Length: 52
Image 1: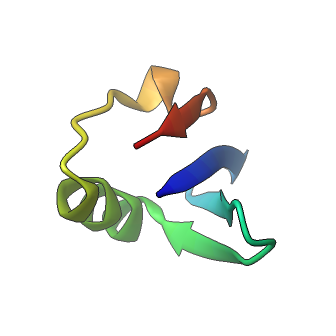
Image 2: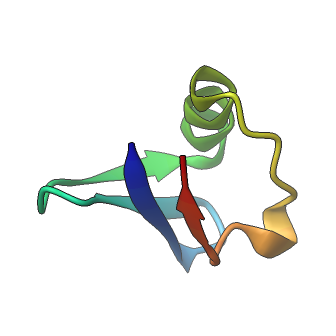
């Protein structure tokens, strides 16, 4: 699954999916999402594109 992360403020991150959908998640929800995707990312690198 292809997606891109964009931190929009200190407590929220938008996840953009390749099919045009996006979700705005809290920090806790982003952590859960990353665990579900099998990715362990630090907060500093969360603005980078992630391809799985």
